[in-house]
Length: 61
Length: 51
Image 1 (tube, one colour):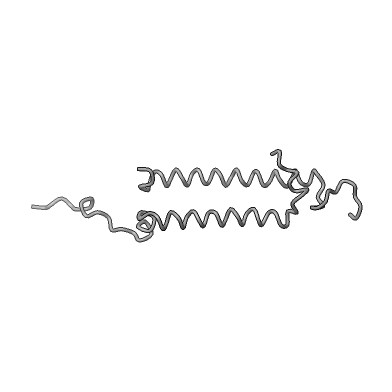
Image 2 (cartoon, rainbow over the protein chains, first blue to last red):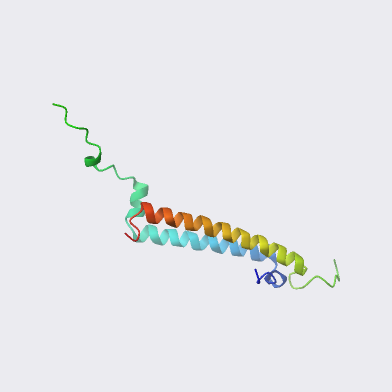
């Protein structure tokens, strides 16, 4: 909380959107990096079918 | 507004105004942090990440 005087130097009408916009850009970059460097992220969106073994009903005689 | 001695340039805010604004910025950042921690816990639990 000791950085409050930054707003005496940086005009909030510029500093706030810049700060929030930067957080947004970083978040998008990180999500894109994970999406493009893993299989499980896109696999999650792809929606794999449940493995058959987990849903087989007991064989009725 | 023109030559108020309490207003500090270049931003033109007074010190109390700047500190009040910053309190909201810090509170918002803390809420963002908590949400991010929760999201990372979910990602660690339900994804192959780090397993």
